Each structure stands twice: as structure tokens, then as C-alpha cells.
Length: 266
Image (cartoon, rainbow, N blue to C red; front, side, top):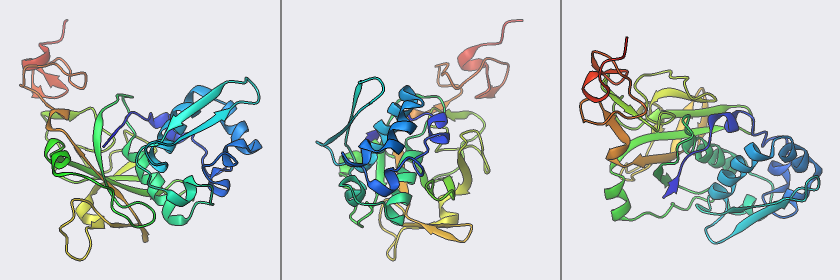
């Protein structure tokens, strides 16, 4: 399990392919290069946020990565979590699979509202090992949400697709970068919503896994990650609560929800 909240603006300008990390690895040496310092010190608060999710995705739980700015002397520390990139996190150059897995993980943690919400992240790490999960996790995060794939390092892009039916007109969610109400949704750029997972992705030969193992889009094949959310993260007009994704009005849709938010003042 993890917590999303990475701003889409942070994804747009993360510069991971040019700051030296992809070559030098996510190790002490990789964080001490001039390229990384130039990238980080250009926007410390935003890059601190990006690195928080990079390290959470790549490094195992119980480990940290830190960086001391040569300009300000401030030290930043980031905690590991999912451990999806064992080679890169130990200081090796990023393989293509590691680039894809990190891309998928960052996209899965994006939230256009900047809201932190717990999510279940399922799939395989870059070495092919399944991310561990329990039956309790699947039961708690019972709502299928989305799959994420792409390669931000090579400029291929970041893609998301629904792992369930599109939201209907009365529904909305704080996880708008994953679960969508329509195809070709560009509300969360640079994450581009491309439709349904089943149109591009497979779950392996037996199809019994709770996650996708491969996605092919625009002629390229990627290793994806799959997310699940709690049912409470899907808001419905008429449930008695005016959620921040809903709006006043005279109708019964999320953007004109009289039942929850009342009519708009004149």
C-alpha cells in the first residue's frame, strides 16, 4: 500500500532523464553529481516532493536516501517504500524496465488535486518479483481503479487507463488521474488517459493475477502497475455530502448536484 499526492506539475518538470539519476543510480554517488544538484536546486520545494515519490517507489521500506544542497546546506531525506527498482536504487544505471516501472509508479501516485489518498499498488518490480499483498489489502481496497504505464525517461509519455467502467455522470473522485469518466481525458497532463486497461494490457497466461503484467500502446510494450482504491474514494451525487469534486446546481450530476451541494446562489 502507498499514499498518492504527487502533483501533476511535479511530473511535468521532474527532469529525471537529464539530471544524471538515470545513469548514476539512486545512491549516494548518484545524488552527489553536479547534474542532480543543478536540477534539485532550481526548485527545491517541488523537487523535494518529486524525490519523495521517486524514493518511495524505487527503494525498499526501511531505507532512506538523502541529499545536502551545496548551495544552501539544507539536507533532505526521503524514505523508501515499495522497493520496485532494486538495481537502480543500489546505484546501477537504470534499465529500460526500471525506467518503465518508475514511470508507472510516479503516474500512479499523481493527483491533480494534490490530495494524499491511500492506494493499493499491485504488479511486479523491475526484477520480475510480484509486489506483495494480502487478502485484507484487496478487501479494503476493493474498488478496481486503473493501470499505469509508459516511459518518462525516453519521452514515450505517461499513460493511464480504467480498470473498471467509466464513472457515470453522478460520480466523481479525488483520484482523477487514474479513474476517469471518459476516454482521452487530458485533465491530468502529462498523464494521458487512453481508455480501458483491457484494450491494451494482459494479466499473463492464466489471467488470474489481480494486476496487469504487460501493456502495449502505440506499438511499444511496457511493464505496468495496477491500482485499487477504497470504495469511499468514489463520490456520488445524492449521498448527502458535498464533496470538493462536486458543485452546486439544479441537477443530479457531480458538477450540478442539488441534492448534496444545493442550488447555486444568484
